[in-house]
Picture (tube, rainbow, N blue to C red):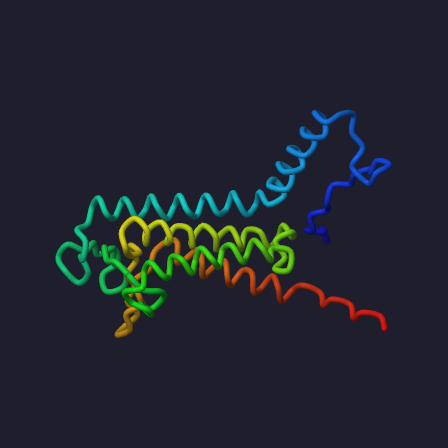
Amino acid sequence: MSDFRLKPESQTPGPTGEPASGDSGQSKSGHQRSKIQRIWAYRHLWIVGVLVFAADQITKQMIADRLPFGSYGTFAQIEVIPGFFNLVHVGNTGAAWSMFTGQSLWLAVLAIVTLGAMFWWRHTLGLQYRAAQPAFGLLVGGVVGNIVDRLAHGHVIDFLDFHFGGYVFPTFNVADSGICVGVFWYILWSLRQPAEPAAAK
């Protein structure tokens, strides 16, 4: 079984406890490399996040270019699978299932604060584990995609419309899918982690 933990780079301390280096220029260069290495350590998160964000924004723009706003239940919607799946163009000023409708700006602020908290407690959440990073990438890409919508349009663009018999599933988008899959992935990953050993008394 592979160990997915990211192991920190080892450094040899100098006589004063600082990493050994030749001069201040080399020290600055080493510090810059260290920053790059720390960012690169989370590359799986960044790659997945960028892909989800790009897919979300591209698909939303395609819908905005082809369907008039408010095309839900009208002749303008695109019926992909009759009675099951339609492409529409609607806006949501609330959260999931249209909760907190009309609070788009505050929801954007809350999302930004949540992302900041996630990165602040990244080690507690397990972002140093490579297997967990794609889950956070899905989450981050989706959250940022919806934040951009709220700030640019005052609402989130939704366009995926599914019907299951008499039940109409809330319209959603690629960002919402990324968030849901990311949360589900993280929960499964968390449940598979071994319990921390009890501290010796």
